[in-house]
Length: 184
Image (tube, rainbow, N blue to C red; front, side, top):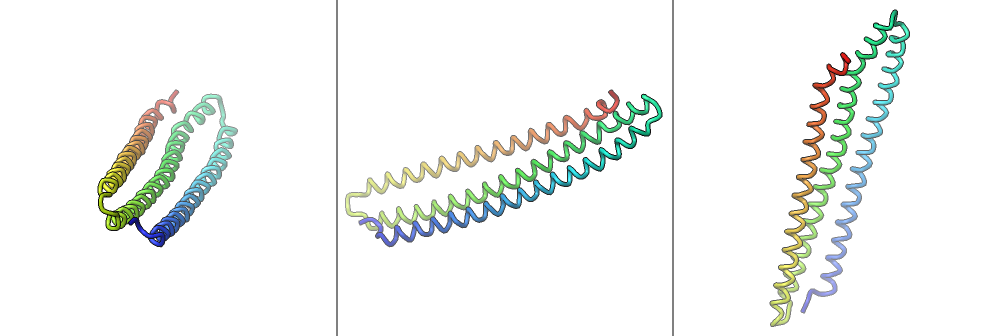
């Protein structure tokens, strides 16, 4: 005989509680990331406003066109550095959120795997004679699903690492080019 209705209800209840906990944790992390993004954008906007005002004053005080052009060119490297730093902060916020979602998904899958494993073990204990093949098929199917999830998770982590590496490479390529931009 398969697990009792009570065992199934308990497993369903535990799964719902686990899902609610996951939702609450991820919602909190999403709000925290949004707060960081909001703070970053406000800080960047304020700094940009202050710097634009100061730069405009300097440009208005230029004595001749050469000084005017020199002041504009002098702004190129700091502006590029700030853009690279801003993008780095954005990447850190996104990476932190992705890592939290990944950890939460791994915990959720581990809990789910444990619950399904217990369910299958209970079903195997109470299964009528001759149903060993059905239980073996169920275990194999679950094992294949778990292996597929692990492969998907590994591929997703590699994609995130590749994105972070590409972002770092792009930032490093722009930084050496900035002195040239300032002299053009």
